[in-house]
View 1 (cartoon, rainbow, N blue to C red):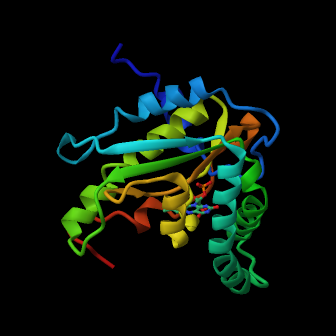
View 2 (cartoon, protein in one colour):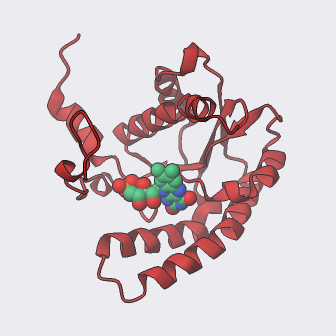
View 3 (cartoon, protein in one colour):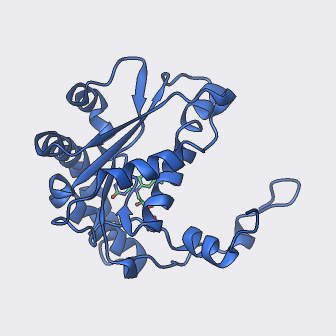
Length: 213
Ligand SMILES: Cc1cc2nc3c(=O)[nH]c(=O)nc-3n(C[C@H](O)[C@H](O)[C@H](O)COP(=O)(O)O)c2cc1C
């Protein structure tokens, strides 16, 4: 049982992408499969084993439309600025990300499931406190996305709607002592969407023993 098929595991880890354009907006998602993925995500670590996580699985079209509206208002300025920065750019990877991010704004209300991960606690000025807070939910978020990908569900971790965090909290009824950390649209996808991309070379990012330039 401890013998993992490294080929499969490494493929999962290297091909789980942010899926936006290939989200199937028509096909419903079985919520039992979302629960399966969430169940797996609960194996992630939390600070002091606090397990202060909560997950809101949104399928109600009115609430998805409300979130999409908040997201669109949040995205407006950001996308305008990115468009300026990318004008005439030959950086095809980032131009693609921009196109795809802009597309998501238009269709978010149609994505069948929105998952909102939340964590108990509030932000503070304390580095330890903030690392512990976000560190007690983001590993689980990524586990959820990996589990979804393994079931041919596409997803993308987004944070833009948090520019209007309070409005979204009210729409979703999130209590004061919990923090939403993102919005994950989830839908069926074409498995061909899952492929590796190029990243910066490790040698430019990893130091031994001490930071070096
Ligand atoms: C902290 C964080 C915030 C993100 N916020 C958004 C977002 O608001 N909207 C969006 O479309 N993508 C968002 N993304 C997805 C990134 O754009 C994406 O991960 C990146 O372009 C790399 O693409 P890949 O995940 O397919 O490799 C976010 C990713 C992270 C890690």
